Image (cartoon, rainbow, N blue to C red; front, top):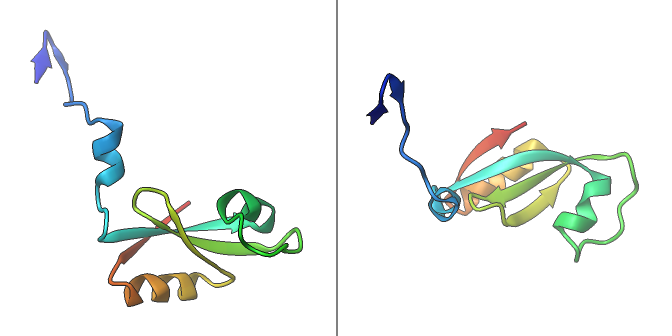
Length: 87
């Protein structure tokens, strides 16, 4: 689409964007142990200052927490999800 000399991109709703990759893609994100209570309220108390990895569904829903990126990716694969990393 163009308007005058400016190219316009089609807009994607937040709902559509959130559902992209649903059931097929998960992402691995490095987090700090201080972030755990907000993402995983049921998790036991964890010492501050630790580097952890969270696996999230494509829509952002937390799936698992681990101390190894490789374990997060293995969990995604075992659940037939393609894992991608975010920084």
